[in-house]
Length: 106
Image (tube, rainbow, N blue to C red; front, side, top):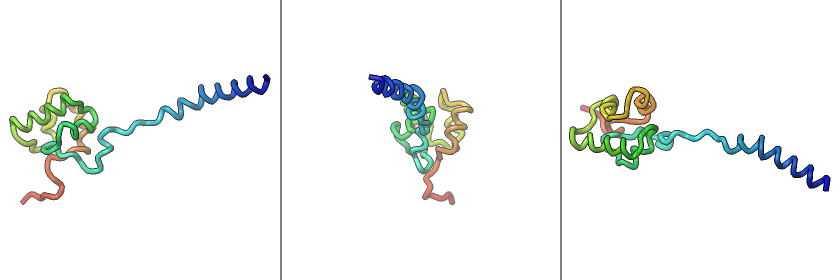
């Protein structure tokens, strides 16, 4: 009986103090899944949702904006989308591009 009580106490201690450390692993940013920058002029709604701070509504707004007004000329152009301000842009900037990597301007 004492053996079971000791086991129970030990198991409880591990669960209380050890489990949060095991479960509280730091999540990777959705954008970290993409090894190369996401081209905001060609990405689909689904691809855009992998970027931090971009949900389905903002992703659709990006697609709608480029279809109605034309392609983004600079990365900063994404701040024309409602809900994407300076703080969100700072997270997005290293993860987005406005031209294909393989194409070089003349």
